[in-house]
Length: 351
Image 1 (tube, rainbow, N blue to C red):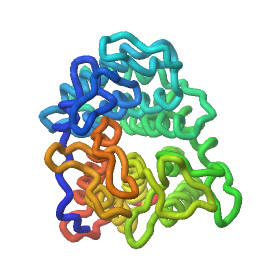
Image 2 (image 1 turned 90 degrees about the horizontal axis):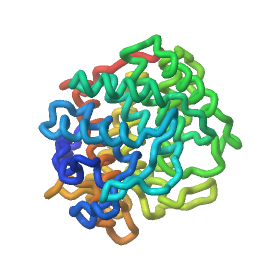
Image 3 (image 1 turned 30 degrees about the vertical axis):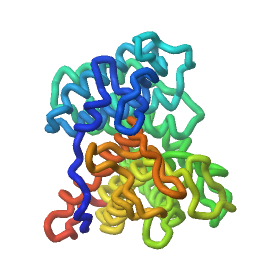
């Protein structure tokens, strides 16, 4: 698998968006807009990413800052405050299931991966306090379930994690409307690959071969629907249904990131190189192999651009897009390392 221009994953740009309060949500070009504040979603994302990149020189500071934000944001149970202004006061925005799901993903990842014992301990404690998430929203539950899957890697008897994964397998395994639209929703929206990835994680944990096959089939359909001319043409920000045409804009970095993550998990589950190639294709979208033929990251800063537009890019480098870029490069790096020099060694076997 050859993506020669792919940069090594680095937290350097994200370090500039992060202070002692947390990670700043928005940027004007590459300048952090602290006046717009911080959000729980991004703290969860960056906590997980920094925990997986523990050797990066900025990882420890970012993980501690984001974990502290989540601890302050936690209200009770599966409820977190959503946003904090630059001055430190919390906004009146209602708690969000999606934000809780992302917080749980970050906490679960930190509990499993963080190389700093106190971070692991604090993340596990907060995960335990907040993991009883009950929500009808598939993406919120999928984020939480992926966090639970991380916890169960290191604590297989963790009851809260097992319950979360069980809820996810029930909610995410719904029927589509037919062979032409096997998706469990009438419309694709955002972070779509998250749903089959969480179902696949549930299948791994429960050793449910049939669930795993259905999750892989749904991911294969989603990937096939979004490939155009050999490159990814992702569902735009306003979504898509069976009648939608391509290309469409604005395309968001989160679609490339969740696709790379889901395909990396499919590769680990099956050992089939075709899934590794889809990770490469998702990474290539950032490098310019997309509908407009422009790079979706700034090589001078290492930040990811906020959207692919019909005639170029949104040059702002906010937290979500920049984390999506780094996480995708990390997925590519991990898959390459697992393939080995011959590019053919399977990473794992199907359960």
